[in-house]
Length: 457
Image (cartoon, rainbow, N blue to C red; front, side, top):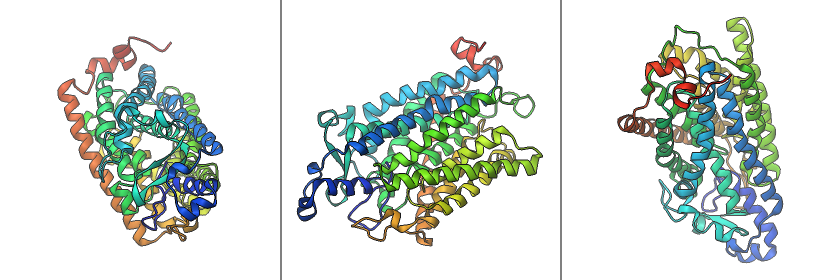
């Protein structure tokens, strides 16, 4: 789900525009004449089937996609520990989301955070076969899927976002610290930002910023948190001296491939319905990923003399990241431009930038997700195509302009600053309570044995 159609203002952002239009058609002439409450809409089986499929695809992005992608890029002694991080976060975030996360993100609340009205998914189970409305009054958005499906779809986003952060501190954080940090971060950082951007009451939503599928909420958020974590924890033992080459790039290729396929659920699923916007989101996602992979490996070929497998898969992910906020708002040619810029930006961020700045972002969480998320968020303001976001309430939709670019920039800076400060505070709290980093001895032995008592092969 990403920014939605709000009748109180001209901006349309995201998948509820399709859902609202479908609800009007299904409800018949009476809805257009009398504008009855959203409860008169009915669940659309096609939209629901597509959203359930998309939910499964997005979950696959974390387990096994991201788990294998990250595990393939660490040293042999840390493969199981890296797999464990993604898998355990999938379980942990599920429970946090059910207990309180969903309510803080999508409860009514105010401009900055939701309330606890949906704590323990109160009211969701009772209306399992009914469409639901997000928001209230003039800003309310009606959906043609059950809220149970919406909860699940959003849960998969809450799962993958903290899992992305682990790439920045790979091979050196305590498992216990990761667990506590993930719980706190989901509640204090992720849920409020999701509310800002995707709930009709959120202040960034009201600002008119465009984020179709998570450029700010997922990628900038995770990338910045990863950067802060990498700085706070410090460099890996032996960084810059020891051989830290990936042990099994085959795993990484499999993981990246699963991410690529799963991203169609991530982006096309964010249309909220099996319609034209979903089709365009799927098309531009593929275009951006393809050109970004070529751009990264071409840059690497020129600079280093050989195109690498790691460069190709990293470039594809960079393109997927950058097109995420734009997927439901841009046409194929702008997607090509976004992907090209993202591939080059990701290569620069993963090579030159982190070496110049001296931080150890182990698996380039900031270089790929943070920087390319920023690229995508800003370029959305330039390339947004009005008719893609048009509704009866906003017949011209939102078109790219300098004004829209500045709105995108404002939202990006706000998320960057809040995430950086909040993440730093949470890491310091966790450090005081249980400590963040394993001992040097444990790090040299490897997290598989020192934290989990297991060994790969």
